[in-house]
Image (cartoon, rainbow, N blue to C red; front, side, top):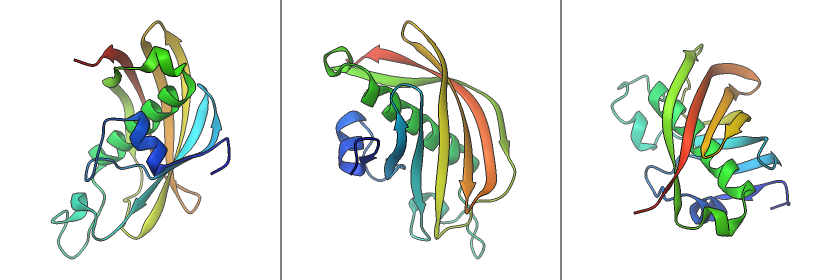
Length: 150
């Protein structure tokens, strides 16, 4: 991929998440430590839509929030000095103003446009909007912290 994007293999290098909990498939339009767009391929076979809801599957809102968090963690990990991030994890601290405007139906590409609002030491604040084919599905603000891996 281009310099301003990373693929799933690079995300796996940056984050501890693994299948089935690794939700993001790539980051594009990266402005280091500032913004990016994460891609989530939502499929009918995705574990989080099995039984949610039978006959009318929908991606649960909590998984959209989790994908926001993973995207922000990947953006941050990708932008900081690799020696500084070595043996670190990014933990979600809070979620604010989460709104779910439209249901995310499987067999779509969910695009998460995220932005780092500010950082203070190891604490970062982000905001994001989720879209399918240009239609806003949800938005949220959240904060996270970088901690030592045990």
